[in-house]
Figure (cartoon, rainbow, N blue to C red):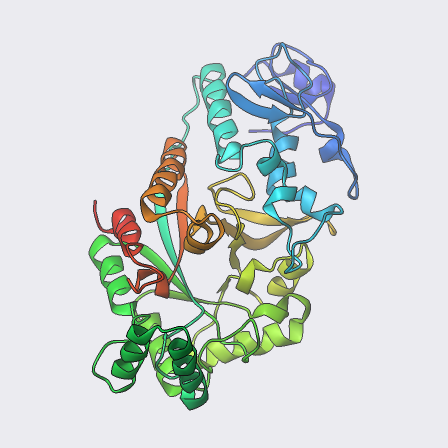
Length: 404
């Protein structure tokens, strides 16, 4: 394959060819270009929606053409998260909210739109260039587990457990008092200790599984067991022997690169291996600073691309892709892995019962299978606990990864 900017050379070529320009040059597959990919800097761009068959598109500029819009510029706009560089109204945790996104406002957040476009484009390429062989990709699933609270009761110390007992008594939750006492006496397993079950499912089903550990110092937002706790360190080491582990940078690392560096070294000292994966706590992600900080620390894969309040595809794709830094106009080596949903989204934000959540997840799964994409889920160890708060939610994880 050759790429040329010389019109005469392009016209003289007798083989299969495609142009990306303002107007067709010869008998070729033609994609009319939008100015976005030729601009420098970040500008407030007007986005008007239209349709390509039944598929929503924008940057339409060639309504009678086989490809009626600039598929490359539109894909770049979504994948680069261009809109997150523009002014927006932050949520209470200083995040870019789902409600500000084009995908949410135009009703395609639940669809991997870039992959749908790519599949339609592939069909056109196959028809236009029948002598070529095109590779087909396979559907994949990845289970990611966030460890924000290692245990419900164990290793929390006397003050925190005493406070919990007092609170439960005042709210007449005597069953929780009894459960806590039994766990602390070693007569019952801590409900959040679901690690063996997750590892068993991973092994039996050959499921790619990644654990992200929160090991920052204790704050209002970071309430896990201390990283100096020997039990916690032992569990991290043990899990790292079987599956991949990553860092869950704590709440305030979004604005504090020194704190991020400290936490990365902390987990690397525990597992005695380089840590190359991360997911921001509370999904506190600010572009491009957060990703630039991760790259400076040689983090090569980030799993923060998603929303807490809504399920779906924040970057409109179910395919891992490389972060393009609009500030420096370069593609970076940081791979972005977007998750389709988080358990907390269904349970706490949308307040769905497990049966309805399972139905929504099935719809997402179907969308990803239709494009042979990568279906990434985000669960927490406590959501598999079957305790009062998470009653019947373990079945969703089993439906995805065990009941096959």
